[in-house]
Image 1 (cartoon, rainbow, N blue to C red):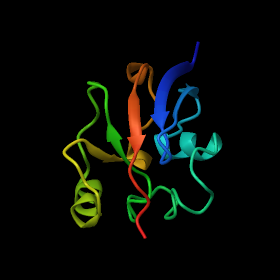
Image 2 (cartoon, rainbow, N blue to C red):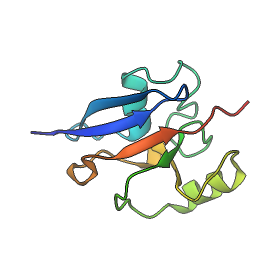
Image 3 (tube, rainbow, N blue to C red):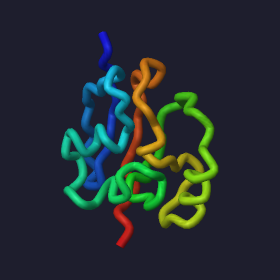
Image 4 (cartoon, helix red, strand yellow):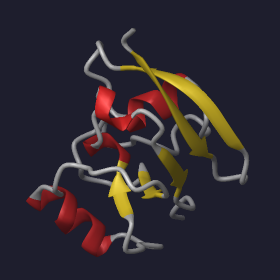
Length: 110
């Protein structure tokens, strides 16, 4: 089985339990877009290059994630609504180890 179960709370506060593929090299931002959990044009604006923070999310589960890259750290230092558990969804690649991951999408920056 190459899918994992993850829970994503959208910007309206609705939690979605979804299947995310681990065999397609997708990241969390792409999963959110494919399930249309955020209005088009409001997430992944930079295409997943860690350059816009539109895919910022709050990691709610205790999963061990890869360390933030310098680019991700720099982008989050300039973003709004940043919390200690903030990550960029485009930098979280779907792997078997993330089964059960729980995240909440950060409010849209305007």
